[in-house]
Length: 315
Image 1 (cartoon, rainbow, N blue to C red):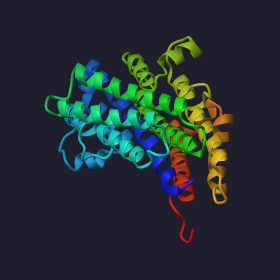
Image 2 (cartoon, helix red, strand yellow; image 1 turned 30 degrees about the vertical axis):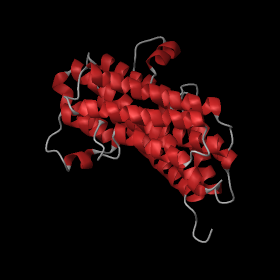
Image 3 (cartoon, one colour; image 1 turned 45 degrees about the vertical axis):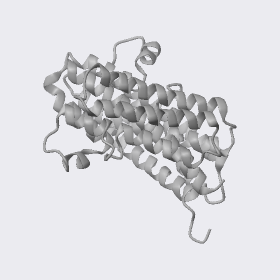
Image 4 (tube, rainbow, N blue to C red; image 1 turned 90 degrees about the vertical axis):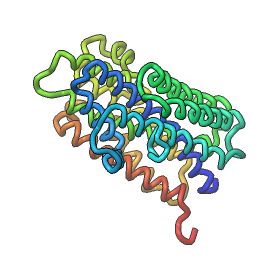
């Protein structure tokens, strides 16, 4: 496969997954800020921290407010990581490879962009809050689910399909790790507060894990079990283990003559998750462990770009 085609497919999937994860993050942050308004600035600052947007936001705003953060991360097209910008980037990458994806995949992403642009204009013309905002977040998540379903249901499972899946799972692993990294230390102090049950529940809902947690543990929500579920459970769809299992397998399917090192990095990351115990992670410290994991994800991403997406000098 041409590296340019693989690049567009990979980033089409990453931007689609990124839009969904941003919607999940903003939805749970907004709901938590309504429940505990006194903590609202902290919640919105954490949302910027998770997505790495503090610098870009502070360059344009003096203070962190719910309205400004929501506008910046939702409908601001000059912010390349906003919801609407991510949807646009996914559509542009899909447009570049229309002959590779099925017509259903293209029509789904194109329609998503057209409708997202209309919704963004409507939200941008009024106060970014209320039921319209939460409906918008649900709509973004639904369109991302639809895109993945159409991809699986209509595309030949060839290399093009595998690069789409590769982008999806690498982006998902990165986002889940960032969310847990920021929230775990914030929500797991030595002295538990009464409102933390709601906050842990909101965190689980942000990755569609609340009902899964109840089914697996059938008990009260505890920080240790949340970390175990989101890091180590292979059968939890958005866990780090589930994502790296897919990344490791897919890299084996698309391997070429120069991808041995990237496969090695992915295999090591997968093995570390497969054989880890939550007690060992807690002993190291969740933040320290996740910081190392995110560095590994970045290294795998750089390897994928080098081996498959960016032509090597002289190649």
